[in-house]
Amino acid sequence: MQANALTMQADALTMSADALTMQANALTMSDDALTMSDDALTMSANALTILILLFYYFFSNP
Image (tube, rainbow, N blue to C red; front, side):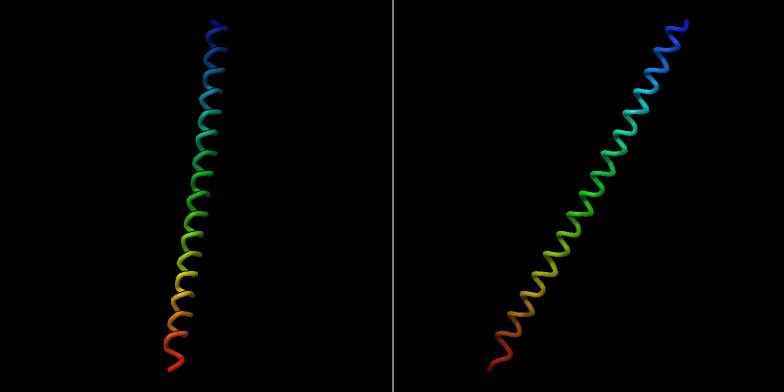
């Protein structure tokens, strides 16, 4: 009986560790998604800057 109880406790600890690992993986994926979103915003801002500079270049000098 005690061996079965210890086995069940070990299984519960393993499942708890697995759950913590999944939470850590989810946080990592969330951080990666935020990084990609930030990169996309940076690229969008860079593209807008280039468009503004091109507009200025073509329309400022008659």
